[in-house]
Image (tube, rainbow, N blue to C red):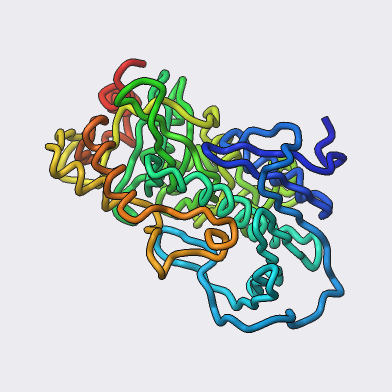
Length: 376
């Protein structure tokens, strides 16, 4: 199917439906690639929230309406991104100066006005689609968004959480790259109740994958064919291949920002949407041990660690976004704490210390994956 010829499609995410209409050449193809498989594409559903992307090179430099100041728009783990906003009566208009993009946020609809089709604006559009989907999904209090990477082993998902630079991405890359491995998400994973009592599923959230230079240095064979271009994450796989042929690969260890399809391809791993959640591992690198150490967490510690791992705290006045207000989809007060309690009760939670053997020896890495993944 020629995706560029499709005017609109509805994408489903757990508890969310977003219809995307796109007039910017190439952007719809890229969006489809980075959204799937976490989002599933289908026919247009009339009651889904609409995100329309259109070229608006001649728009007024200043929106009409009452100035609202800088309002919260996008919630990430370490920050709430705010932009200048205006109230027109029927919508809230938001100016994103970084991407030269305007968002017109109304009930059940968001218009994204871009000045051109430059790949730089793709990140802004993905932010909108993701925020619209996440606020719908998290209006169900049983769901929980965690700051965690996720892989699949057999039919089970293993989550890796921890402090910044704890080694989550490196470990997920190492284990997913083993034979039979699959990658679900990096940095942000949605967990929700499964089909049977006290079961849970881990579902990927499409975010760019930030790969530190030291991870590239530790696993050079995985990233040897990344093109020498700033932010490959804003390109499709086909566009990356074209740039690679023209400019060649990166010359050495460097910080990379990849899309999840690019990351999975670099690993030689399948990119999958979800799996049954078997374990949440709280990771820290420990060069004082040869291979790895796993310590089961008691319930109280597990609750505390899961709650600490919540991605982008919501349900506070400081983090209630324009999208939540206009779409009337809010995270209930206390929902994060209650969901964290349930996850810690039902899912194995462990403290994981990782030594150099995990990166240096395949047998050690496979043993760790088996120990965490359970029934493979």
